Amino acid sequence: MVRKKAQRHFQLIHPNCAGIDIGSREHWVGVDPRHGLAVRSFTTFTDDLVKLADWLEQLKISVIAMEATGVYWIPLFELLDARGFDVYLVNSRATRQISGRKSDVLDCQWIWQLMSHGLLRGAFRPADAICSLRALVRQRATKVRDQAKALNRIQKALSQMNVQLANVISDISGVTGMKILRAILQGERDPKKLARLRDGRIKADEDTIARSLQGNWRVEHLHALDQEVACYDFLETQIAACDAQITRALERMPMREEAPQPSKKALRSPHRSNQEQAALHQALWRTLGVDLTAIPTIGVDTALMLACEIGPDLSKFPSMKHFCSWLGVAPPTRISGGKQLPGKGPKVNNRAAQALKQAASNARNDQSFIGASHRARLARMDSGCAIKATAHQLARLIYAMLTKGQPYIERGIEVFEAQSKERQYRALLRKARKLGLELVPAA
Image (cartoon, rainbow, N blue to C red):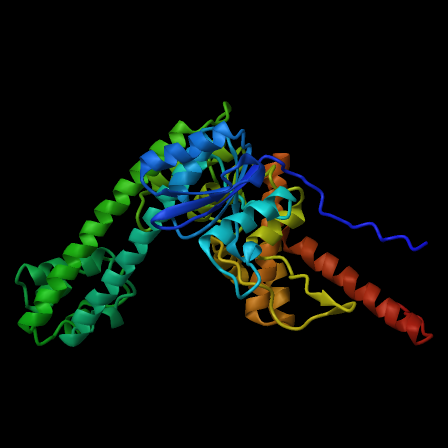
């Protein structure tokens, strides 16, 4: 008698779940066929989204999986989350089907099938208050980039008029540069009179500045300069409005009762005064519960970006390794046949990781334990790998601070040098033992 092998099936993890294929004009929803009508489509109008949520409530659906398609998923996600559903925002790479069969109906059924067996993982999304703050910070970052582009166009207009102001002062958007630009737009053409607007902190003398301001003053270039300066000023007012909204959003968030100590680090920003920077620093400390700016190379803007991208609650990450892997700063795991595969891991676009990498690149000249670690990495690997490794170090520190509530303690360069010397000694000792030799200390 031949026994048939027992068929193995996937375990049913979520019996009452649904899969949604997101689109710009309509959403396709797939549920278990036992409900009768297994697939339905709804338009993206608000009244149809409400009908979608009502239909899922009638079917007693508790878990929903949807693809992160553009920004079309945001209204539906927020509606379903407010209605109490457990919504999983899934990466589209995890829901790819076998090539050859592709349709919206098959996609939503495939998402439902994968979710019912627990084969999909939801993306990290912070609390709703943090998402509101994140939208404001991202809007501000967009305005800052637009302002930088306007500044480049100002420089282009000056170069076309052969006004070499950028070659004698470091920043044409500073006090001296903006005074000279506004005077030019008001009709002043005398280089000596323009050079008298020089600030005392400028290293170049008035004669050098006057020589750089001898241009051709063509009408079309002056018109372009006028419009770009107006655009720059308009964006400056919009950045200030974003800062005001960010401050209000931080005030609405739950904060610690005890007042944090003032920071010893110089808190400077091109768009905020020292008082505004200090107030933002205090608000971030009260919100997060720890002072991230105590970590070398991390300023207020970096701490603000981390606060709006990850928030103070990291309980969704089981361990520090999961957090670093989500950021994309951990070494990739690419092993086949017991061997490490060559090449890079998948590209991860993460704003928090970009902020950490920027902070890591500033550690080259920092006189701290992190700065010494970064310089040691630069000595043995290329700059890209060293920056990523230092960002990984910063991510581990931030995870420990936010989860344990412990302040950052600077160990100093002396501790790093002592540890480096100890590692070198152990390496020499292992090599000597391998060669059958002994290390003898010098007299």
